[in-house]
Length: 138
Image 1: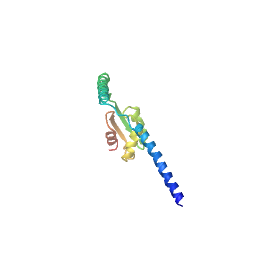
Image 2 (image 1 turned 60 degrees about the horizontal axis):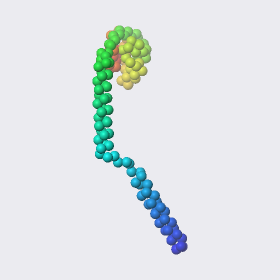
Image 3 (image 1 turned 135 degrees about the vertical axis):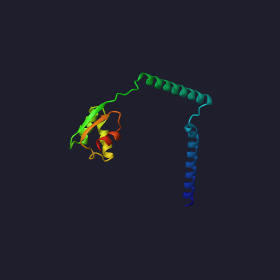
Image 4 (image 1 turned 90 degrees about the vertical axis):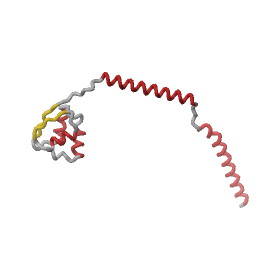
């Protein structure tokens, strides 16, 4: 029994020694490379140059793109029993809204799909979903 215990202890001591050697030799290799202060300053300078170039590009893009968006006006006539899906499709075709499905989602989220009232409404493309919904559900 003594012999077995000694052999077991010697095995643990041997394994611990091997693991310690492996850890300390590989530990130095796993540390991230440290950069010098000069390299850091160079990276910061490059980052600042890129940021300035990006700002300059944004300003040039703003100057070249027309800032005025065309406003569309549409006279929407809703008949009795007409589905909200059909209304949304007509608004999208008239360039009043960008996406019919997102307008339907807005109506569903605010429980307004059944509140749409028949009538004739003047709708413009600069109106928000809320404004359009408020106008057609009065």
